[in-house]
Amino acid sequence: MTVSIIICTRNRATSLKATLLSIGKAAVPQGSDVELLVVDNGSTDATLNVLSEASFKNVKFRHVCEPVAGLSRARNAGLSQTSGEIILFTDDDVRVPSNWIQGMCSPIAEKRAEAVAGGVVFPADIAILLERPPYASRRYWFASTEGLDRELPYRVVGANMAFHRRVLEKVPQFDVELGVGALGFADETLFSEQLRAAGFRLVGAFDIAIEHHFDLSRLNGKSILEAARKMGRSSAFMHHHWSHRPFPLLVTKLVYCRLRRFWIGLTRTRGEKASGDVSDTDVRLERNLAFYREFRVQRRRPRKYPPRHEAAASR
Image (tube, rainbow, N blue to C red):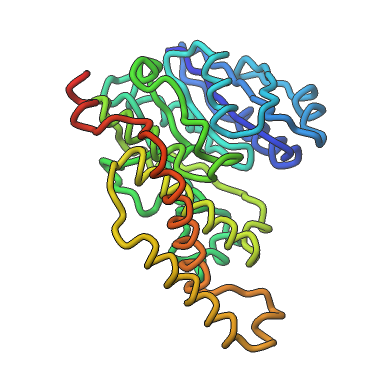
């Protein structure tokens, strides 16, 4: 089989270097032709030096540049620059196991599925932090796969996903309005929904787990609130353009959330404000507010995608 591994990166030179080192230690299935493509999404740090110095004995390696910021744009650029029968994606802040390539590609090579959702776990220090609120119920915001069905997951996670190239005949690209650098989330969710709606089979390979070493700055109060806003905006996009669902009493709910947030701010003590900590309630309110605001914008637009029954009829 021929395999194209794609990594998209932007200003994460140090973590990218560690990721590339782990891929360099991964076993390549006998008789397979594997290439690794890194898409530099406009980095301004030492990423180019890391890429220029990288060398591999197990895979063919090259890198390209996609100057327009946005993870979906970078992924689409990677898809256009590769030709492998199986496309394997991961992120620039992970460590892959030695059996990663074989484990993720086998279900596709054996014709048991057209797409595979791999596992994502965390190193011990990050896992402990994610057990605390407000992160504990939102671990999937950090690419956790523990909440997905082990046999028939409904979506893939971009840090560890694979699919056959023929998927691109029906789902040619990732939506550039979603994901990092755009609305923030849901790019992989929409891609998953589209490939499943097109009749492709998605299975889990959660025993093939990469380790996600994300930057701990994502766990401060300011960052988690910004993530909540991005999740809300992304959900509003999906709600209107993919699910085709109305949202009754939108203005009433928006006003209620604003008043609720204002009241919580008034009753918070000076010490609580100084700490910068955020609660589950804070995160939930920010997400809901962002959803309502974005949905007001999106519902004025024509829907980008047809109803799913129409999409199924066109297959």
